[in-house]
Amino acid sequence: MHDQSPLRAETWPMSRTCPFSPPPDYAALRERPGLPRVTGPSGRTVFVAARHEDVRAVLGDARLSSDRSHPDFPWMRVGETVFPGFRPSLIAMDPPEHGPARRAVAGEFTTRRMRELHPKVQRIVDGLLDDVLAGAEPVDLVSALAVPMAGLVLCELLGIPTSDRQEFTTDTTVLIAHDSADADRAESFRSLTAYFDALCATKMTERPEDLLGRLAGHQLFSGGESRWAMVELCVLLAVAGLETTATMTALGILALLEHPDQLALLTADPDLTPAVVEELLRFFSVAELSLVRRATADIEIAGTLVRTGEGVAALSAAANRDPAAFADPDTFDVTRDNRRHLAFGWGPHQCLGANLARLELGIVLGTLFRRIPTLRLATPRDELRYVNGSGFSVSALPVTW
Ligand code: HEM
Image: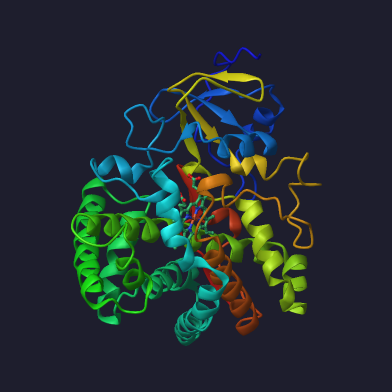
């Protein structure tokens, strides 16, 4: 068994030095035997899994808990520390609670449901691009396209009436912004949960033919205190579905603009769109900071003993660049076989909204480059502002055409 006393003063999360590469130390972490240890954000050490097979082993092991409300949980996402007492749905649940709750919602993300959403997502993207084309250049595609698209799609998914969409967008934008003050974030959270509480009450009475209307009829969500369970689910869907998809949209546009040979393949053959989306997901792996677990038993992973109570972080961005899983992994190649990527996680908590994210990214990227084939950056890539360290994204993407 490997001795994994902390080797160096490495802290995690680590920053990227290039928008198209994971933090440089990830390659060295992948080379170390067993699971290396690093210092996590709370000052506590955590094990990290960096190889593809080890990340899968971590995420597939039911003895590793996702319960972020446990006092020893190695790390909470920034927002969660601001709202003590609030328990995110699904993503923070363990067995036996997690399975039934996930099954109750899974039917809302089937291929059939996505087919129903397709024309609505297309309408949202077309409307936003109409505005982009009617406005003055340069246009910031983060605020004019990526964020509003992800927000409006969530409004469709949750059945939020048109009259409430501005309030929803304002609250969620503050909630997910990396530079929001804690007090502002707390206020947006309070406003959003109050809004969802009222919305869920209406859905329980009216039972419309939409996601919340259908869930209101489910035994896990019907009646009494279970309305709060619906509110917690709404918050999870809003937060999990917004930042990730908006970030991937912006980074996807950036990557395609900076790899014109790959963009040419897409514009020449729109049937390549799903493969482009998968390669972008692999290439950026934007949601890896959610992949943290706490051991509920002494377990051995990759020859390392992880004791009860210790934390493990699964580095999906390192796994998705593991040469043992992907040939020439640092090359952005939309024609590669990338089916094994772990950008949506793995195992029981694998992203429930993956099909929706794929739908949105396919529509927005396909439509953008079809309607504006001469699109180009208005600011050089190195001068763009990035959120780096506690998550990774680009703050603004000024473009012209
Ligand atoms: C590109 C966009 C997205 C990425 C990269 C992404 C990534 C992830 C990852 C890595 C997880 C696993 C977390 C864990 O194991 O702890 C996850 C879970 C989840 N995601 Fe996504 N996500 C995306 C979009 C969405 C969307 C659009 C929705 C829905 C509106 C969504 C809903 C969820 C939910 C409900 C879970 C929790 C599943 C569970 O715990 O059973 N995600 N996502």
